[in-house]
Length: 342
Ligand SMILES: Cc1ncc(COP(=O)(O)O)c(C=O)c1O
Image 1 (cartoon, rainbow, N blue to C red):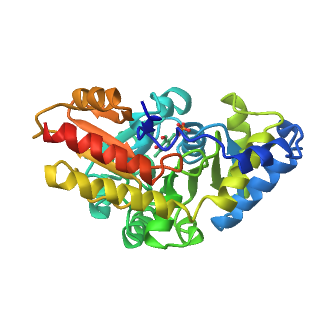
Image 2 (cartoon, rainbow, N blue to C red):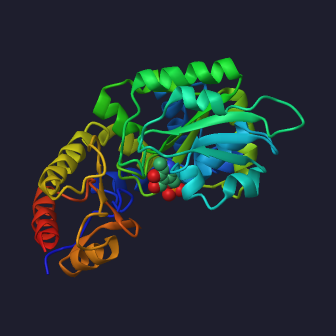
């Protein structure tokens, strides 16, 4: 069989030769002492990109989100987010388990958000109900099919947060994709949020690494929370060097991944299975009306060397990334259209 075409996630990429070289030659130190030059440089670069005072390197996007949530929501207070948000879908109850945070969700509508509905959900301080302390959004939205929240929606949410006196957090694991798709400068996104988490290992090709972004005071507290969560790393500059390389070389090329996803979507569109308009690198499939379910599709595709993600009994997902080239997309189109045509 030809090589596998892995469309399960953009987390499956392997470091490129240039990235490995950068990692091998990184100047490192003990980051728990704050002495790793590569980590310090990455943190300063990312804070500057988003126009914030400081940033903190973390081992994963989940930990970066959870550190940020603990910064903005005290125990016994609540976070509002959508029901499909990564923070309440894939982070294994961490907000409650580590932060004593109560989460309340609005119904997921793909990547979209209605700011008025969110405003109506906010609960004020008082001893009779759990007070809201933060609102979280995801840009781009993973289970929302890589949807990009428009700038005007985010601006409206900022107004909602300001009027309610609560924080606005962005799970920006793929904010790079939104930046490339909509052309919004990263600093313009940054200015709208109290805290952000961003990932270097989704789409950008780094093997590990995320950052929490916020004010200098927040990041000082974040360092303490990260240590408590077991996320203090020593010569982490080896990893930070991969992240710095990814930021320097792999952001504009995300447009190629978006084009590959659009090509996949175009080929699959005649089957009437696209759950939403494809804007970035995620192609969500709604198999409700298909002759086969998500497990059957994944098994049939796997037998022909194409890997897809099963998100639910009738929901599947294809994700494009730097380790699948145009020939791989051609193969995936041939295999998937043949299976779907039954
Ligand atoms: C939107 C979003 N946020 C956070 C994460 C968590 O990242 P990690 O797997 O590094 O914990 C992911 C992972 O895919 C994600 O898609």
